[in-house]
Image (cartoon, rainbow, N blue to C red; front, side):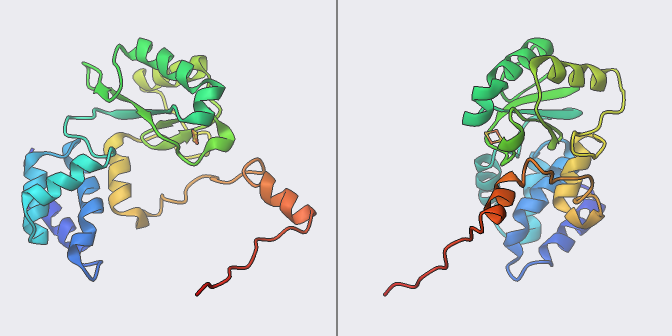
Amino acid sequence: MAITEATREQMQQLAARYPQPRSALLPMLHLVQSVEGEVTTDGIEACADVLSITPAEVKAVSTFYTMYKRKPVGKHHIGVCINTLCGLLGGDAVYDALSERLGVGHDQPTADGEFWLERIECQAACTHAPVMTVDWEFMDDVTPTSAVDIVDRLARGEQVASTRGPVIRDFRATEHTLAFPLDGLADEGNPVDAKMLAGLAVAKERGMSAPTSTKEG
Ligand code: FES
């Protein structure tokens, strides 16, 4: 699908947010993924045109960051954190179970276009390791069994909610929120719980505080 005039207008809106229009490239690429399901050549050319930069510059950015894909992601993006804490607490086993269930490996789509599986890096959610994401919404404290169950429910078209509240939509919808985070959904759910604040609670109990910074030179 080609980039429409309406999408180009949204790109202009994004570019107008910044003193330097090219700063809008990252949200513009999310916008492209929200309408195309991937970063297409048409999308790259439209970004370059709106920002008055070269397609090569857009391509360089889109191939540097792993959240941008040059193949159709499909309906749902499934991420499994395999960094140290998640890996040690079962993330590798979660990834292996999902890889077997979906029949695909790292950074690959399923043949039916329903899922994309990816090993992902630390999501700053280590408190609830091992962590899986569905369309970048958190699924905390997963096990191989619960992770496969989430995918099975999505495959059956059932409503699935993140462990932090938001109902899973789909990859394209999330990409639109990443382009336009002021859609009212960015703070949906309950992103902070007592487990995440345990360190802060201990620091308060013990009267601890951060050292004040000192200037050198
Ligand atoms: S190591 Fe997985 S979220 Fe930090």
